Length: 335
Image (cartoon, rainbow, N blue to C red):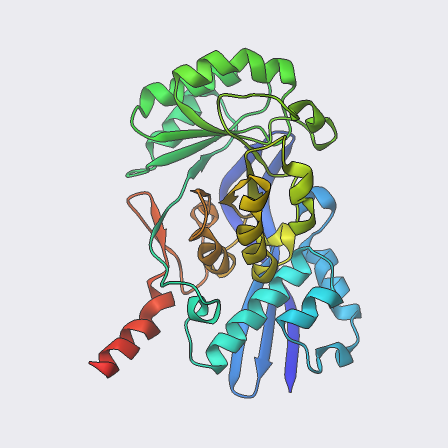
């Protein structure tokens, strides 16, 4: 019989992290343990802070659920039981891993995907002075892609320019977290083109992004806060070139894989990101990232302590070697 338990864990950040309109000092996450017989698995969710979806609210929702819900529950029936959001994400990912453990399969085999490869991930720099941001970017030894958090202030241009000067070889992306206006976007375009910025993420507030419809921006624009789940894809077409898939937003690995398949039918590429979390949350997102143009899964690097098995970060890449250890063991057995 399936048993579900949830608890809240507090994650400490190495230092405060700033984005447009928000400051992260620490992060609480919900950990869900799914067990059946001798098998168990853990899912983790931070929730979607700007929608009031927190570890505390998810824990209350889980505690209020009738235990009879777990009888016969699997990742397919879960999609009807709960809406998209952090709680469904934690449960969905735990159920995926539980089934993989029960069948002694790597997660990617269960999802009918090829063995995962190491992925280039962006390394994120929070909003700060131009000099401090350039210093933070330069400390990512081996980084191949840097994402700058910007806030719509007059300093944004100098932030981009200073980081590019300090890190001339990296791919450069910017993320406004809804903090820009169209006028600010257009004023920065010549500079961003000159500095070879490759992506602009969520420049406008959600309630103002209609101004992007039909806008021919020479730099691809990705939807983050404007895009939550599969049913939003149609609304993104014509305004954005990419959508940022986060498992906490869409409610787990099941829907995330659907988005990867469906986005191209709407003329949209995909990137994969995350909320603040440990490698428990990064692992299923890493599977989704195998089909993404841009991967932004550096969150554990901001924590004083990660969970095990921890992601391997090396030379600007993220990898989970433990994910395919079973593949290697199976191959050895057949040799």
